[in-house]
Amino acid sequence: MATARETLLKMLQHVADGGDVTEQELNAAIPDPHGWDPEERKGWEELSHWADDADIRAKDERYANFKRNWIGDRIAALNP
Image 1 (cartoon, rainbow, N blue to C red):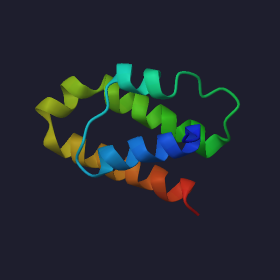
Image 2 (tube, rainbow, N blue to C red; image 1 turned 90 degrees about the vertical axis):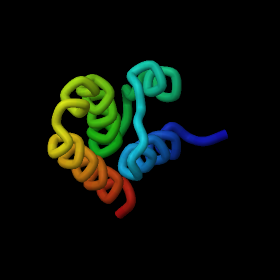
Image 3 (cartoon, helix red, strand yellow; image 1 turned 45 degrees about the vertical axis):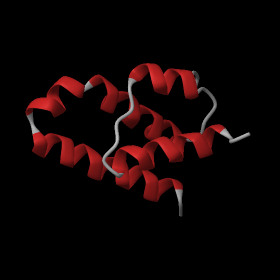
């Protein structure tokens, strides 16, 4: 069974590679990030923002690319 951190990294990578994650998928996979280290928490929050901003990304490709790059930064921070 994958750890929460492994699941988080997999979901972040999926988005960075051009995929999508919904709020329902995020909450089903990782319902409570309480007790995580700061970088894990930032990664979870970035995925949560990603899911919340679907309407903005649909209208603004530059914003979507910016957010994917930001998610790439979260992946790098979690893989020192």
